[in-house]
Every structure is written in structure tokens, then in C-alpha cells.
Amino acid sequence: MASPTTSSTPASFTPYQKFVVAILAFLQFTVILDFMIMSPLGAVIMPAMQITPAQFGVVVSAYAFSAGIAGLLAAGFADRYDRKKLLLFFYAGFLIGTLLCALAPNYQFLVFARMVAGLFGGVLGAVILAIIADLFELNMRGRVMGIIQTAFASSQILGLPAGIYFSNHWGWHSPFLIIVGIGLLVGVAIVFGLKPVTAHLSYKNDRHPFHHLLTTLKNPSYLLAFGTTALLSIGGFMMMPFASAYTTGNLGISLGDLPLIYLATGLCTIVVAPLVGKASDSLGKYPTFIFGTIVSIITVITYTHMGVSPLWAVMAINMIMFVGIFSRMIPSQALMSALPDPQDRGAFMSLSSSLQQVAGGIASVVAGAIVVQSAEGHIEHFDTVGFVMCATAIVALVMMFYVTRLVTRKLAK
Image 1: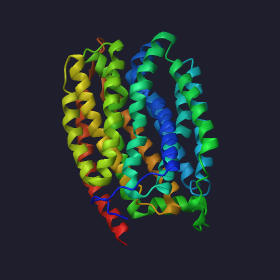
Image 2 (image 1 turned 30 degrees about the vertical axis):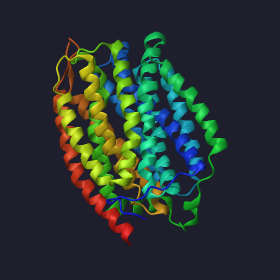
Image 3 (image 1 turned 60 degrees about the vertical axis):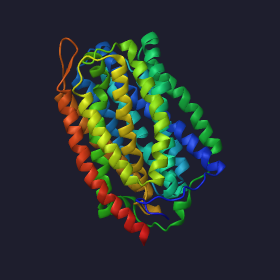
Image 4 (image 1 turned 30 degrees about the horizontal axis):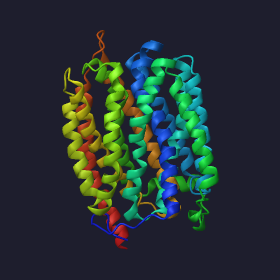
């Protein structure tokens, strides 16, 4: 198998692998949309429920904290069952939590609903990554991650504009009902189309689930990856919850024009994500990550220091910023998927997801404490949040260098 730091000849996908990538991308679309929809709906939910930015930060972090707890609890059992069954179990729970969000009558119930959605939805990403690592070689995973991440772009193009449109016409509860409807169709496709994923069960694993959890958690190589993943999460989670309020309150963009920004960035990233995946497989995962870090730092500093701006300028900076985000996200996920042994993948991915969500939850709460919404609707101190994100990006760049070296040594054995 080729080193992650050198180019290699990409292998071709089989028809079944193409189906797996497609169905996982659709599933990821619903999960990402459920999480991402909270950001643009923040400008609607806060006045509708008469809550502060700090309280809205709690709504966002409730999902993250419960997802982190679920990932920790699931880690010991994640390698003991057919990954298809795990996928269906957690997806069903996620859809129930999303339905509760649609039915939420007040702030307290919404926090509870986000916790339920997080308990199940937060583990889904780990199961997806474990399935990808089981079914695809490392020199294919960059492209797989790139395609899976087009779910993010699709949520930008289709989901978020539609969600804002429906919330403006039928209330902010309606987007969650639509997500549940789409999710039911995806669930049916998984039941009848996805084969059992059981190769990892062939490895002897007599350890108690708790022992399996501790053994995975104490592995020095894994610990470096966990720390890097958590650090990567902090920057994104700090900026994301207040992006829509910042765009409308500080940059002078109307609520009606928000869907156009999400549409533009979505169209950009749905093209860029597969290209980043190909570059990650052919040019190297760490060089692609370096490029993404540089782009992210430049655009975040620019974005968080903008004043009232024309729509085209806000669109442009968002598009470039997401190029940087995906150029970090895709190669880092592909690279770290090569660290765990097959019998540890489920536990590794679950713990990684758990730490990612907890770190993101902490970041959301901290960001909520940093930013203040003035009486005029301005989000103040957002530039401070941007500087924190840039600092974490620089540290993560160094840590990812050592992750790359670990993976290279492992593949050389």
C-alpha cells in the first residue's frame, strides 16, 4: 500500500463500492443538515424563543456533548457487531431525535431534543468512517471522503436554502420534519441495499468492552490522533453557531439573502470536495492539509474583520473559506483512518467522534461566552473567535505532521 505522503495510482471503484459511497453520502447529508440547519435558523430561533446567544450556544452544544457521551459509551461495543446493524440502530435513534426537534414547543424541550439527536447522530459519523476503512484501501479513501463530504455541500445547496425557505413560510420546526422524511427513505435503502459489514469480526476479540475501550484509549498513537481531531473541531465549532447572526448583523446581509450565500458556497464545495479528495490520494494527504490550513487562516482573519459588505464579497469569502475547510477535513480524516488496526476501528472512530463532539461543545459554549449581541443586532468580539480558530489551526498543523509520520511508519512495516 502506498505511503500517504507520496502519489499513487488510484484504484477504481467497483459498482457495489459506488453504491456504498452514494448511500453513505445521502445518510451523511441528513445528519449534517440536521446539525448545520441550526446555524441559519439561529437568526430565527433566538427571537422566536426569546433566547440569548449564550442560550443558543447551549442548544448547539447540547447535541455535541450528548454525541460525545454516546461515542464514549459506544466505543467498547463498536467492534463487536455487524456495522450495518449499528448504522441502522443509531440512524433510527437520530431520526427520532430530529422528530422531537420538530415538535419542540419551548427552549427547554429543544435542548432535550438536541441531546437525543446527538446521542444517536454523533455516533453515525464514526460508524461511517469505520465502514469506509473496512471497504476501501487507503489510496482510495481520499476520494471516498471527498464524495462523502459533498453531502455537506449538498446540504448547503439544497438543504439550507430550502430549510430557510420553509422556516420562513411554515415555521422553524418544518425543516426538521423534512429531514425525517428524507431519512426514512435512506433507511429503507440501507436495509435492502447494504451488505453486512463483518470482516472485523474475524479478528479474535475476547476483551471486555470496558477493557477494549481503555486499551484503545491508552494507545499512544491513537492519543495523538484523538488530540488532533479534537483540536480541529474547536475552530469550526466556535465560528459556526453564530455565522448567520454575524452575517446579518455585522455584514449587512438580509435574512432573505442568506440562502444565496449557502447556495454559492455549496455549489463551490460540491465541485471542490471531490477534487480535494483526488489531490489527497495523488499528491499526498499532508501537503493538501497544509494548503487547507493556509487558506483557512487567511480567509478566517479576513472574514472576522469585515464590516458591512456587498453580497458578492460575502459570497466570495465564504466560498474560499470552505475550500480551506475541506482541504483540511478530507485529508485528515483519510489519513487518521489508517492508524487503527481493523479490530480497533470501531472503538477508535467512536472515541475520535466523542472527543470531537465534546471539544466542539466546549468551543460552542466558549464562543457563546465571548461574543455578545448588541441591541442593534451586531455580534461583537467575533474577531477574537477568529484568532482562536487560527491559533488552533497552527497547532493542528504541527500535530498532523506527527500523525503523518506515524501512518507512514505503520504502512512501511
